[in-house]
Amino acid sequence: MRLRWSAICPGGKSLHLASVKALPSDNAGLHRHDFFECFFVDRGHGTHSTDAGELPLKADVLCFVRPDQRHAVRGRGAVRLEFTNCAFTAESFQAALSTAPQLGTFWREGATPRSVALTAAQRSAFHS
Picture 1 (cartoon, helix red, strand yellow):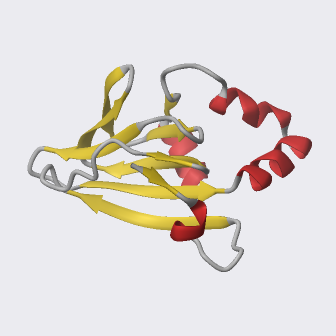
Picture 2 (picture 1 turned 135 degrees about the horizontal axis):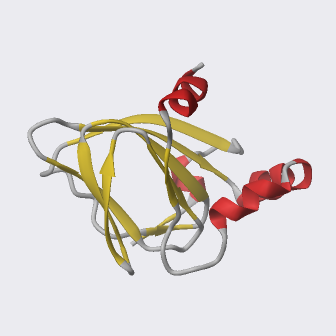
Picture 3 (picture 1 turned 45 degrees about the vertical axis):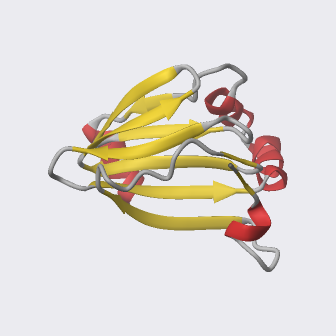
């Protein structure tokens, strides 16, 4: 399945933010999309499935997904996987790169979407 920006965020908006809560039974399946995405795991455990395999998810992990990377997020265990999702257009990403080129390292080309485990100090700064 390929999700389109116009279906996720109609009306010409360039940014979509959502708080997501997922149980193991909530599986959207592998999909692609025509926009950039990142998500921050707030609570719980889960799996980020990609063409390269499965990556474990837990609190304080920040993941980056490029357009057309096939992936799926699934909760694991009795506690819901809770994450904050941010999606934005390629045009918005290019505009951000013009002022902060270091952002490109997180969405670099490669088979596996990048993920970073934040320290307690980074998590605090992320939420402030």
